[in-house]
Length: 327
Image (cartoon, rainbow, N blue to C red):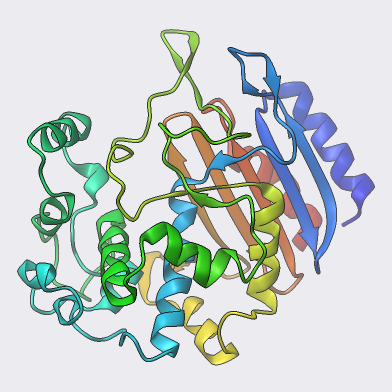
């Protein structure tokens, strides 16, 4: 795979597809391709640049998992312990749920984003000055812990609350101290859409055939352990660290990439990563934003896609690039 080959592929893709976002592809730490497309704000006619910050949605789960592994290595938490041992408010969870289940989507807890009329429910909770943590704990148990696999953002948000309690730090400060500062990820942080964040892209969506500014994420009103913003350049630093990690020992890092739950016949989930035979990955999506990170460990290739338009298909790009990587 060469820079010229990648440039040709993307020239062809641009002819048939609308991109709005940033793309970076690296191998062994070297950038092979990076480019910005479209607009950070169509309303203000501001173009995307490589330094533009994007909401990365569920890609954040990688960072939550890493912070948990770091706390485990420090002896502050034990991954097979019950959550209530660290956060008493979680005593209402099924008695067999452990931290391991929360991190591997094997807890059986319903995904908060599957709640009917979630935006209405969150508005109601805020008006009534309710407690998001208590609301999350009451989510239905869909299967016995460890006896199935079901994607659940609920579990990862609960892990965020738990780690706040253990460390005495806010989620934003925990992310900063544990991962972002050590990796010099200076353009990454907790994304609170109502706050002014210079250089952050607006999300764009299509409604009734018209391009509009997208709504904020349903949970964005709560300063809960949530989702990050980042840039392709910062996420490259994270990707590089997955091959040579300064944050945890090699033995601990292996836990991230161990298959715990079966998603499909040839797809499993570790801690914060989907695991396929040839690659590992995680994506994210929220109104107006799409993100995708994929790594091919054997080739030491990382692909980072950050988009602020739901018109863009990450799979179209990945299917075009993958043959150059694995043949």
